[in-house]
Structures are given as structure tokens and as C-alpha cells.
Image 1 (cartoon, helix red, strand yellow):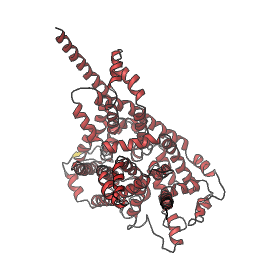
Image 2 (tube, one colour; image 1 turned 180 degrees about the horizontal axis):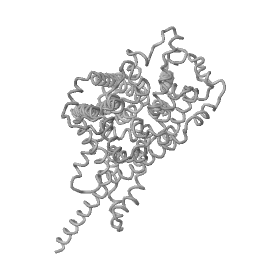
Image 3 (tube, chains in turn brown, yellow; image 1 turned 180 degrees about the vertical axis):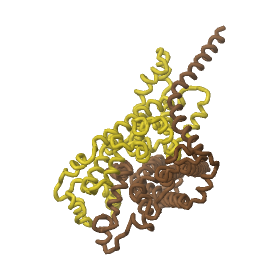
Image 4 (tube, chains in turn cyan, blue; image 1 turned 60 degrees about the horizontal axis):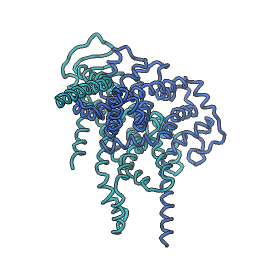
Length: 301
Length: 280
């Protein structure tokens, strides 16, 4: 009798706990459905329609025509190429820089926290501020651009950093790596601090030098952290928009037009909303494939 | 050379290298600050020498000009208001969900947790057009609702809270339950007051992310009076007459609130970045 009663109480407690759990969860779940799941469905629906916002009454279902047209759209492929180029260059650059900075500030010594704050300062500053500031600094005339003033003073020729097709994207890459490296530095730093000090002491006893210690202790110790850093940096890089939008407006000659910029332009400049949604769906698929591939890499060994 | 000397030389080299690298990161920011205090013609004088960092005379005219030429106070208020609104609602809603995922037994818990983790790297840019259509159909364009409501539910914060609450001592909860507290009272009276760090972390990460928002406000806040600070300075940058002193001043104004917040909450900011990195 007693046992039965206890069982009943536990059952009731459990059921009540389930109810409370749903009460606690519902607000967040509703919001996530409304503003992630519903937009995904909307995007897919519009991507199958001919929908120009200048003629909203003339919507029609056109199947996968938008996708087929995209595949033949050289501007789309150009944007794709630019985004991939940016990602492929900026990820190793930024991660490498971040690792170097982390090694520099992992030393336990006085004043090191000032270095940390310095390296982190651009990351705390908004991308809009950074982009405007660098557009001024990288002005192609040596009378107004700080960098070019220094270059010409040293006897070099002024570089049209943002105004030539050959250098614009590379300038944005440099600036982005400079701006973002502090963030990844913090993750690497936590990884380095997580490596047991005993390992380094043992290595010291064996007479290992700095490079050997890095090669055989630090690098293996940072394996998982590095993979995670590469994952988030890559996804961050694929989202490139603010820098070219402010600094180059996608130019010169579309050399800094990225996928997000392309989607924005098709939707709000060309007003081809359905078409832009198809591009957004493809963009989404690319990111999912990229993150799944990188996650698989993360999980391996 | 003695061992002590060797160590001292090593230390000096370390500080020199560190300082040089640090300068690469802060010099542009210092230049921005110094230029904002200069007279317009002085900004581009002696650019190639170090004296570009030393203002001949200090003036606050540039700052005055920013406030005269743009409703900068309005922009600052707008950004502060919508960012704080998002963050407060985000902390409330997502901490509750994270708590449920961490401490309650219920059907679907595993699936929900996996969904949250999977959606953490969701590319917002991919749904931005569809979200725009949705917000437009609600009639929310150029309103606070468009800036705030879509960003309250956030998988990253949910996961952050879940990870923290998993380690929350059950004894505390049990003691409160025996005292006759209901689950909501336990959450408000016991859990929240004992979870300061995770709330601070979520606060600073979320606030800084939205303070820096650009693309979404660009789409939904087209009225000047709804403009955020990032939109405000980007527009100001392209408004004739283009004077670089006031532009620099505007950049400084936009940077200072985040910098102060960062210096105060530095520890939590870093914790937020790293905890996601190590556990994720």
C-alpha cells in the first residue's frame, strides 16, 4: 500500500515536472519557430516563384526556374568565387595570426593583460567603425591616405588599396584578419592555458627547445580547439557583407561583391525577390555543407 | 653571459616585440581618437611622421559638429534602447529554456537540445529576406518590434545557459522545494541570484553583437528617427560636406560605449567566447 502510494506521488511529480518544463520552454520555442523555421519555409516558397517587389500582384509559381537561371548567372558565380576566395585566404591568415598572438600573451608575466586588451580592441569595435576608419586610412592618394603617405615617404609607389580590382579584396582580407584575430586569440589562449604545465616542465628536463615544445606539446594540445576555431572563422567569413558594402560598394568591377551582397542587391536593388530567395537558399545549403564537413573533421580522431 | 642576464635580455625582447605588435592593433584606433581632436586641416598634415599622433591644438569642435549636424543622441538612444530590450528579453526567455533543458525530465528534451546545438551556427543572412517579408506582413517595418522581437530567441544563449545550469547544485533546488517553493519561485529566488556570471556573460556577448548590427537595421529602419548608431555613422560618412574631423568624432562616439562596457565586463566577455570554444 505504501509502495503504491509512493509510486503514484512520483508519477504525479514527474507529470507536473513535465508540465513546468513545457511552460519554461514554450516562449523560446515559439520565438525560434516564428523567426527561424517560418522564414526558412517562406524563403523556400518564394524561391520557387517569380516575385518582383515592383509588381507584387504578378506573383506566379515557376518551379525551379530561378535556380536554373542562377546557375547561368555570371554575377552569381562571381559573387560565389569572391566569397570562396575571401574565406580560403582569410581563414588561415586570421587563425594563424590569432595563434601567434595567443602564444605571445600566454606568457605569465607582468603587463601581459595590457597586450591582450590591445589585441582585442579592434574586435570590440564595430565593423562599421573599422570599415570607415580603414577606408580613410587606405585612401589611394598619399596626401590623404595614411598608409600611402608612409609608403611614398619610404620611396615606394602609392597603392590603390581599395580602388583597383587587383588589391581591393586583399585589402579587405587584411583588414578583416586584423579586426577579428583577437576573438580567436582568446579561444586559443584558453586552449593553451588548458594544457598541463607538467608537460612543459618534463620537456624542459629533457632539454627541449621552444620550437620542439611548440611542435610536440602545444600543437597536439590545441588540436580540437584549432578545429573549432577554423569552423567558426569559416562560417564568419562566408557572411562577409559590411566591409565591401561600406568600403567598396562591391567594386571595383564587382571584385568585392560577395554572396550576401549579391542576395541583398538582387532583392533590394533589382527587386527580384523570388530570385534573391533562390540565391539565399543556395547560400544556406553551402553553409550547411561547409559546417557539416568541418564538423566531421572536428569529430574525426 | 650569466643565466640572470640571459633571462633579462629575453624579457626585454619579449616586451619590445609585444609592444610593436600591440601598436599594430591599436595605432589605427589611436589615430582615430587623435584625429577627432584635431582641426580639419591638421588631420592629413605630416601623415607619414609620428607627429600625426600629436595634435598641435586640441579642439572639441568636431564633436560639437557631429551633434549639430546629426541627431546623434537619438541614434545612441535608439541603439541603447533596442539592444537593451533584446538582451533583457533574451536573458529571461532563453535562461528559462536553458534551465528546463538542464534540470527537468521531460519528453523531447534530447531532441530539443540537439536542435539548439545544430541551430547555433545558423546563418542569419540566409533567411534575412524571408524575415523581411514576414516582418513587413506584420506591419513592423520602421518600428521597435522589427529590431527587437526576431532576436529574442537565440540558440547560442540557450546553450550557454544550459551548460551553466547543468552544473547548478541540485541540493539548493531540493532545499527550496522542500520549503514549498514552486518551480517559478525557485527559478527567480534561487537560480537567478546564484547565476550572476552566466547572465553577465550572455549580457555582454548579446549586447555587443546587436550594438554592432548593420545589415538588418539597414533593411528595416529606413526612417531617420529609427536609425541605429551604426546606420547613423555610415550615413554621416557619406553626407556632404564630407569633413573628416567630425567623421572621426562620430566613430569615437560610437566606439566608446562598447569600450567602457568591455572594460567593465571583460572577464565575462572572455569567458563567453572561450567556454563556447572549449565545450563546443
